[in-house]
Image (cartoon, rainbow, N blue to C red):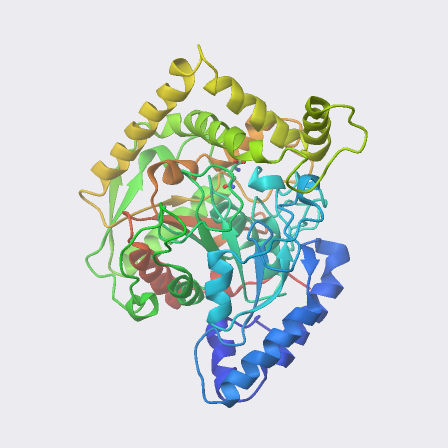
Length: 482
Ligand code: GLN
């Protein structure tokens, strides 16, 4: 049986065929049963969830309606949740309880969403495999020896396994789209500034953006509509109206132009994934769209550029974790200096320390011009490539990841191989654009993702393209065996 979508559950709630209490209890039971196998959650909150479900049922009983009212959902453990631990999958924040909700959490709560728990992730969202979590890796429901991708791997696994219909995620270099691709679900990373970053623990502030992992584009539209919009508490949050994303899903694609970057189909792309993506492009032609080759000549600069910009910002953002104000404090320090050193060395995992060291180095006097300044210039070149391409096409399409889910352990000792997993997603963050991944087939029995990229603030267009594809095909209905 296909796991229900938000839209489907909302209809059942509306018809009083089921209560939010029942849906929430079902989600909690499934999470409890799956946890020893998948490890998709860091914290599960049954009492708060059932209380929120009862409140949603009471709101419906009073005549309130809404597509999200009473829907169970998981938050990536990077979003601050008042009264519930927020760890960012780090020992550094073990035991930290935020006194306030992130804006994303606050808005979804207001819409009546029921939070069932906090999803596992890579430590401080640094990773592409979920193996850097202090709380252990997440398993891919399509193959338990495989990674679900990262850093939103717990969110992706929870949705793919049907534990919850949707989860939030964050995407700094691909962390929503890549795990969505590797687990066969839909993942939307909005335009930079579309969704508030307030209360979302910062990794690289000029790249981080909150988004959603769902079964369908329709569900992503419903959630984005509730999350997006101006927030005075985030100065980079755009002050522009939020469209009715669900209302735009039905527009026909006849005559729409899809740009296919030749650089996306390079030697690094696994043949089975390339075939699935090509077949998806052919499906779009059947839907009336036309394909046009475009070029993103500076795409090759994106991974090296990102691995200067992101660690530089991370080294600054993570300086606040000093053993004094938050979380872990080493018990054996004899001086303040030693307290910093021992707490940071003991609280951060290896990948986070690698990023802090890299970031501090590229920002240091004498190296700043050669690395950081250069990277900013490359970033502009990459953004200009997209701007040129969008002069002649409506969306850009290609693969989300170079290959289907890899084995856990396969890339952990080779950071560069791990970093290359984001080769098709990272440029989108550097340019601040919206990107979406939808399932488009299989290779070797594992899901493959199609990535759609749009101009700034055109997430409605991406959702329309994705929805039309999902109306015509059934890849998004496929589920892993229980
Ligand atoms: N995998 C990339 C990294 O490790 C992107 C992570 C992300 O998007 N949060 O930095």
